[in-house]
Image (cartoon, rainbow, N blue to C red):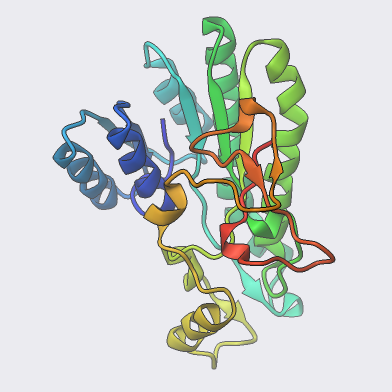
Length: 256
């Protein structure tokens, strides 16, 4: 099951799972993007089901989860960029949507998925965080705060889940070529064009395409191995930066 499957990492995860023989169960609030992903999955010879829903709606998320007969993995992936730029140029009220989507959306998925998986006795919850959930991200205070929260949720839930035979991981990608790179308004930086923002990302971080990030990779030399419970599609390798820097930060993943 994948939320935010209409584009970006959600779509890439759906396609990679389909290649592995899984049956993706997809949702997104964009029906058009969701149907495009479903068509691509079916072109690979896999079956899938889709549901147009908003992860901000707790009842909708729980209903979507409870309609399943079995859940092996639940990817709480839906997210938005939210407000950014100079902090004194936006108000606390501007945080509302990103809190509802990037934090509460994950919370809704975690509660529904954990209850279902605890009953069936197995399952893996995978929460999409970000490198911004491990390190500071200037001019993106709300986004970074939400991703730090997702990492905290994943770390705190893991011991409880392990006692029930369940697994929990957090995905912490760096720059990935998705709409989030240039979406949202940078308050106080309105004179900076979308093209200039994208060029800055290209120069500083060299974003990966989502499909490359979703594929499993061999451990990099010197990377720290994590427990087997975190290995596989969701990373399994933590190449955390030393002294605040990282080599190839777009390749960082964190398997908790």
